[in-house]
Image (cartoon, rainbow, N blue to C red; front, side):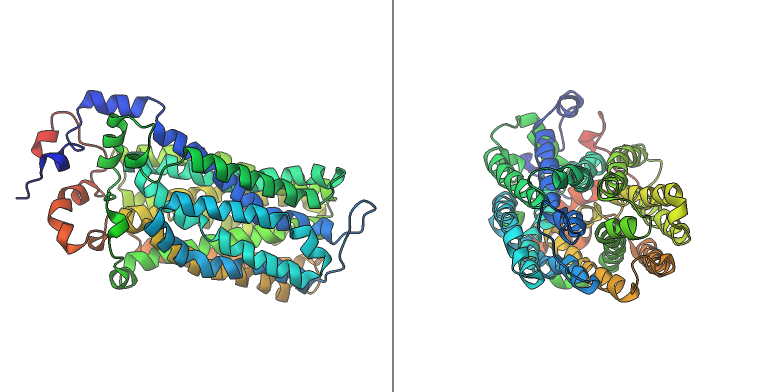
Length: 488
């Protein structure tokens, strides 16, 4: 039998009254989540502004400069972001673990904001210059997911993991939607399309200052958290407070079947999401024959739908898990399947739509992107399920490898499409994306798990961490109930 010291037992022996106080009030973890939500939104402004701006940048207007870039050059511009993005993922995870995610993400967002201001100048110098700037933007943006995952693994109790994590990452969808829907008005303003980059840059700098002031790496370093909430969070995250000094078990990670199931699901989501993100404005303009302003509004609709659905599916997932209706592993696989196989069916139908069926095409596009929200209760939180101590570095690996698909997908679209106005060529694009969804989620269903893996805790800590690891199992996922605490 393993005996814990008083300091180790304290978080687990929180009484029912204290636990009620911690969970019923707006707390530091909620403020942290709101800041991260805003940070995700603004970082997606920096990421998506080129996708929103590529059409007006290459369309002759009287008020703003335009560039005669051909289809292959535009595909190169759209994919170049991910060249830098892929390279920086693992280093970003290591930096977040070593120096603290707060400082890394603040610096990265501020630098990305500064680079936004130089986009119009770079475009004037030719598409190669804009490609170089997008590579550099990708380098700093590669810090976002590893840093956010590192922060969430410290701040989010497992009983709230679906809702709070999904809420934070829904900022990506709301950010995408906001910049797409506002881009039409920005393009028509006196600033023209350069205004899109100036606004993105200014907001990036503002958020970096806010989070540097108000953010914290973990509950223990927060100046505004109560003792009750800190103990509640620390007892239910599974993340060790000294994880910054732990060696990353790379060999165990790369020999884990659960890790490869997670990697497959991440790659499938990324391929589909970024294919639609980068190509949807072109599809709506070329095939559905929508003007720039209508294009901007309708291109944003799927991301608003996805953002809203994030707050629908995540409470359902947490409720099913915390009531013991389904296991954590079953929940992760179920919601990931909904988030990838339903969009697969939508894309198959979309492949047969024409310009005369605008309404049907927009409905299917909205569903294909919106229902992706279920994946946030699937693969996206799975890093923390498998290893709370190393969720950030793991996210760096999976997001980096998945990012390779973000490079390949736009290039394949450029190869497939010799005529942007040909619906049959777009059909092949949608079918390829659907096949990727099918295969990758199938691998997650076969190999995926949602239990803390043995390599989460080094051998020297395994005896003292046995209890906390055992608490997070498929069959029991809620916090200890009153009257049962003393059994531990």
